[in-house]
Image (cartoon, rainbow over all chains, first blue to last red; front, top):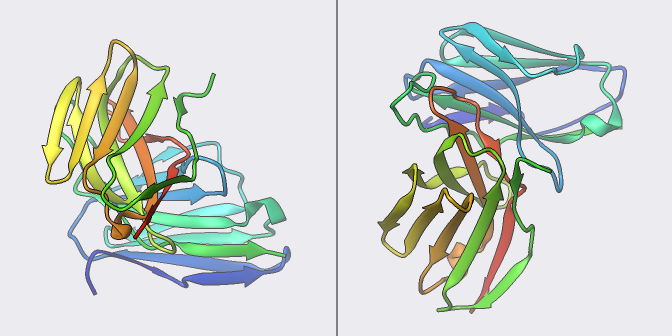
Length: 117
Length: 111
């Protein structure tokens, strides 16, 4: 496997289910991100981890719970979701968090297409 | 006013055309500007990035940043059907990892 992988690629769940999305990066990066991409809306940053520590949480509802057990893996645990949570969930990684004078490319995975019924 | 404005399209052009994609933004503190390409059922991939104002060219792609007008552009020369995708502009402040994205413009290049 190369780059950033995400599983599952598609997920359909009921509002009372609990499920988890998995992301793995094979790039040796130290920072990982969860984004939400909804139709006709810009990508929204949800969470940022650096060296397994959460450094940013953008007012995301508590029904989304991230976990970063090591610098290669990132999970998004889902419970009691709403239909408006249906979207493409993208994981990304970068070498480090952006510094003052450095560019720090984020590499994206293919996403998990989530449908909440 | 939204932070980043981008026309969603779709923009339909014939093969070989010159394509111009644009974004405007409101935060004059943005310093890093990026263009991502996203094919259907795939994640975004970085195409071009520029720091501050100016032009950058890479093959058939040219990125321009005009900070005085808060306007960025991506030009695609000799467009190909394989260029059909959604193009997302993104930008960030110096020292911050958070990217602010536009909604994306869908480009369709017909043979």
